[in-house]
Length: 218
Image 1 (spheres, helix red, strand yellow):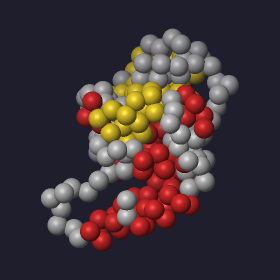
Image 2 (image 1 turned 45 degrees about the vertical axis):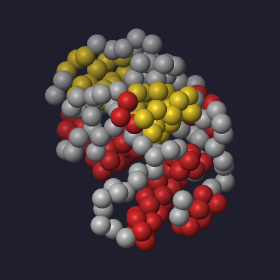
Image 3 (image 1 turned 135 degrees about the vertical axis):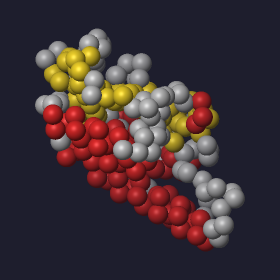
Image 4 (image 1 turned 90 degrees about the vertical axis):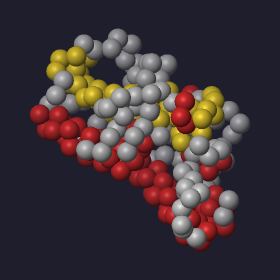
């Protein structure tokens, strides 16, 4: 770990613990997902936007069109990741519209999807739902960048992550966990870790036990 990241870690107030990860699995073993599908559905008197699949470039524009056309209360996520920049834009729309983000039972949210989920004003992970925190990205070994340039890029990544977590009310101990996670793997958070790092912040909201029927699919 370079000197800049050592400094970042030293500033983090909360250490990770041995029981943070249910598993540390290779990132490529995360659930394979096709292109993002978006639907607006009804569940117990609430309007739900369900986003399933890979968050590809341009996904936010589609989601924004749905949000403008429907009065949505919650967003349900089931995605192994995708485009980091578009996931960040997706998350910005969640926060701008003050929406609750949920990972329902049987769903996963990993890698880029996590950035969108953590932007939700309220965040719920139902029993049987999983969230996977990716390790810090490692630069391509074939890159022509110098070691100093790689360290600077890693430092910028850590700064962006810390800023995102602060804005979302997430413990920066989660960033420490990412830095400690072996490259190319995903840490699937335990329920205790989800609460410890404030990944979930609405414990009194009841689980979505019965998936809603689809009403429309743009």
